[in-house]
Image 1: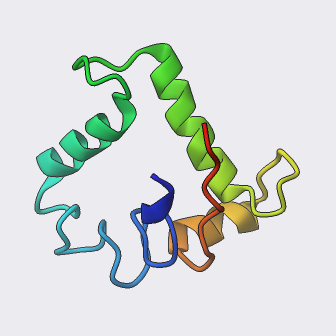
Image 2: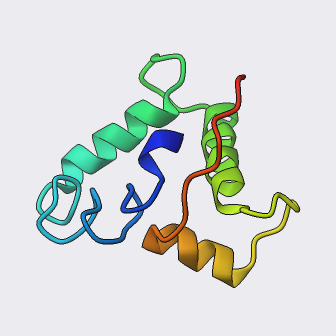
Length: 93
């Protein structure tokens, strides 16, 4: 998920994948849901467990937390949603 979250990434901003008329924008909500589902379904069993759901949201939180203090500020969230910051470095799991 990290590679898609940078500037102009999945969550918004110019040239984003979710902008109006974009591939994942309002014209193709079913495609967006299938892609999000596939990203969250880590074991590919066609269901999302609580563990998979929490892991996906933890990755998003960590990508937003630019100063790595374990807390999100409004500025960090807004920057992430607008795609005005680079994504967090990928961590090996």
